[in-house]
Amino acid sequence: MFTSVLMIEKPLTPEDVDFVTTLHGEERISFVVLLQPRGDQADVLLRAIDDVAMGELKEAVRESEEPEGKEAREPAEIGLEYSLRALREAGSEAVGQVIEDHPLDKLTTVVEEAGADEVIVLTAPHYVEEFFHRDWASRARHKVGVPVLKLFAHSE
Image (cartoon, rainbow, N blue to C red):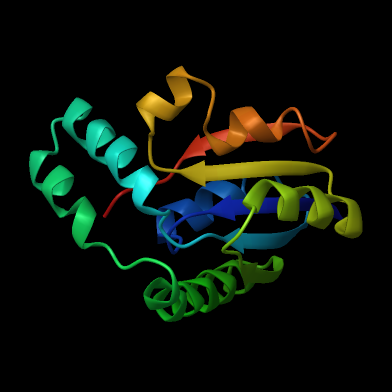
């Protein structure tokens, strides 16, 4: 069985589930899902700039209204459970956890413990972070020792 560590920042949409479960054809996939709630205040500016770059001005204004820290934990846990259930219903094995601190350190540990074959980073576009190679996928490629695939999540 092929093992993928799937890093996400929001619950998976049905399109996302179909996308990641069919990447390797008919091969069965086991997922370890790591969901990180929205970032800290420093990330708000970067997210707002990304929203402006994509022409989503209303989203840029709402960035400061997103729950953070402990307020973001409960919705993240609900989103994780929803995502795990969707992956299982699609025929994959799936376990996961919400991560809050040091996501790349946790990713490295999970890759080693799970004997993962790859990491999939499934996020919305983050153009500023990507330009400066500060996004999860760029940074993970230097830490985890397995292939890292960056995919863009479907928006609702």
